[in-house]
Amino acid sequence: MAERLHAEDRSFFYLNATQFMGALNDNIFKLLIIFSIINIAGAESAGKVTAVVGMVFVLPFLLFTPVAGVITDRISKRAIIIAVKCWEIIIMATGIIAFYLHLPMMEYIVLFMMSMQSAFFGPSKYGIIPELVEEKDLSRANSYIVTFTFLAIILGSFLGPFLSDMLDGTHYKAAFFCLLVAVAGAICSFMIRKHPLPQPDKLTPLYRFDSIFTILYTYRHQRTLMFSVVASMYFYFIGAFMQLNLIPYGMEILGLTQEKSGYLFLVAAVGIGIGSVIAGKFSKGRIEFGLIPVGAMGLAGSIIGLSVVVYPWGILSLVLSAGISSGIFIVPIQAYIQYKSPAVHRGKIIAASGFMGWIGILAASLCLYFLRETAGVSSAKSFMPLGILTITLGIFMIRLFPQFIRDTKNMLTQMFTHQT
Image (cartoon, rainbow, N blue to C red; front, top):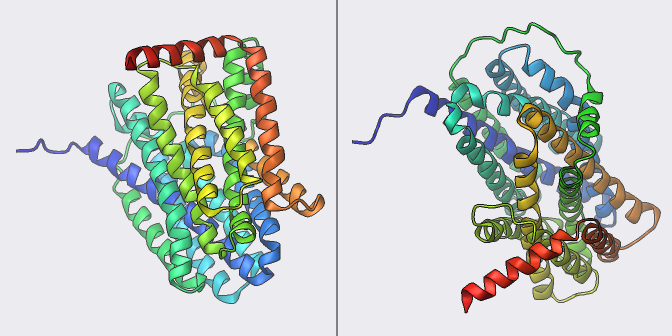
């Protein structure tokens, strides 16, 4: 007979289900808003719409994550999770109305509120894990959270275009699915077990943006660690730029609808998963820095290829290649941040790295807006400066850390020696 599930295991299961549904809604709803506003404003506005949606989506994470982290230390994390999940139901219901009335400004406001509740959910989601599982299971629990978050991104990248396409662009009907997901997430949040309230002896001021940059300044002399934080931010910059630009790109180059163009990022997301698995296989229990130059150059070549290739299968291959290269690039970087951060400040450094990632995402939206609206660059040609920048940073990285090339040579030598 199977061992009976403990209360802690059940609580973590419901926490993971809650966060999975929240991440799923984030990705579906953002795409529905992009498709809806493009329908209203016209296909020629696709670049501008995706850039503005990207900015609106990321701003709440930058504005409210610090205060959310402090609040998490003051009151019950379970109470915060339940509150934001119930708040999500109201937001999704409001979104249905915005879609039905075809009001772009109202849709932007709803998107902002959705991101705001996600920003408040994040610190509680991670902060409650040590209260639900034993210390020896923390690593496994966090890996489940990350895995299911990534699965939600992939599934959301598929369901957003699929629902819009299947329902002939009646986005308010598609948003009912988001409402059902929000209700399911709220129900799961109530199933998380109660735990003692925190006893805050020292209350940190609500807004402490300075703490994010102070911790990075403290470790500024650890060059490889700081490089990893910056490289992680660049990964998020690249990912956000591709997700936003692939929609107008598919419309302009492949002649697809905005919904079908949304499937292109699904290909990239699958590629990131494949690349992550490949990186894990090559690492073999260690942090393999030799993968970083390989991933960076593969990513640069794929992005530049997207600016010149016009054949559908070639484009799909390049999008997949960009995803695979991204996965190979990011795995050793994230592992190094977690491994090399001193235990006493590990949480703060990881949080600061995550915050810098959101800055990278915002920068991607601003960069895309500048290229499209100010410089008048097409979606295809917008990839070219990104590829050149990636090559430039790759060369700078190799000059700054020549050991990466040695690691790459050693890795390839061992691989071919093992094969022969």
